[in-house]
Length: 493
Image (cartoon, rainbow, N blue to C red; front, side, top):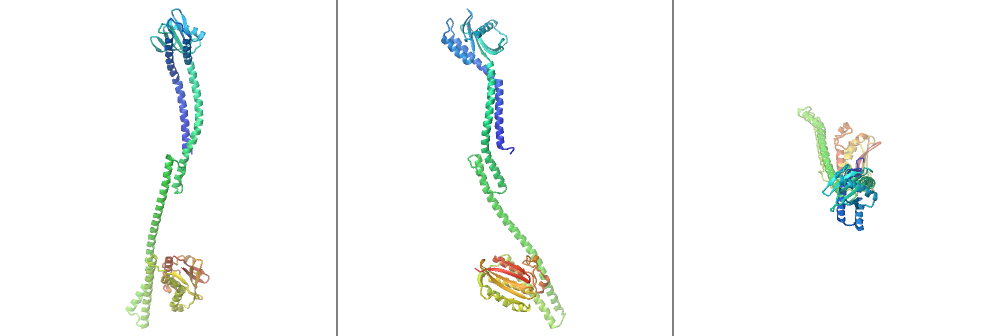
């Protein structure tokens, strides 16, 4: 990352150290010499006080006094000389004959001139003067203090300024080396510790990205008791709450979607129902109205014709009555308003009873019904509704049987699924593949002209579908080369 915190911390550290170095060098260069001069003045005044105390008028300077003074001047890098003006005698000085003679001559010059040239006065009192000057011979710069002791003796103290400049340069050079080492070592430490800081932050960043993608399995694992650790724990807590909230929202959304789909389905069913019922009732109502008007107007006085008119009216009324009954049954099944009562009964006996009740219709259709199962097969289901399913299958087979005019009814056991498989096969035309999924819908007719002949209204298979779905059992249709088989399954246990 170009703008990573680790890189920023390292950059800030290096910039801070380098800034401290530059500021230190500037401060050393600008103010160290002044500070040194100020400090040197205090040292000179201290040495002046010590010389004034130890050098007594009219007495010989002892070795002990010389040793004490020598220690002071060595520590302060100072040379000095004390002379007695009365007899022009040098009483004590730094042990260096060349410097002593030079300083005596300089002191004598100061004593006689009072205001020497080429000097910058730093401090002046009644007994001494401190100034900076440069040596005319060597060119070296010095800070000097000269004046009189309490007993009237003259003195001169001198300390070179060149050493302080060398010290400043050396200190700056040494400081540069120190800073370079600090930058290298510090950068390593900063990189290491910033990595320990940024790794948890990167983990939190990755965690937030996964949470944004709704991956709530992601958890903060680095731990820690610091602020980042607390933030990580809060992330984990937030992840759990978000997961719970999203789950609740999904459930609510799912329920809402189901309700919307259910409402749309109901609206669609209502619209289709009104249209289909209107269409189905239009023809029988027209026939009833037409034949009733014919009877009223006395179109035919023939008793047989009047009886025919009455039969047509009754037949159409019966069809309308049966359709209304089927619609009421289907409506109750689809909306779960009709109770399902499971009981154990003999499926073979039920099928035989339905076949016997349809015997007259079978003869009219000149169909051959084959049902060879004789041993009892007991199943668990609602007996009345199973009879409706089988009766619809048998009626559908009788209405569409052709060619050899055979209806083959079979029951087979599936011990693995523990179910009884019932199929009703009739010879005749196959159902077009594009219509197979549609035949279970209300009022859907594959061959409308043929359906009208036997008074079908496309509701029977819809009732089968509703009943089998209330049982939560499988059903369906299979096309064969010579016919069609409708089937359903029931529980044996």
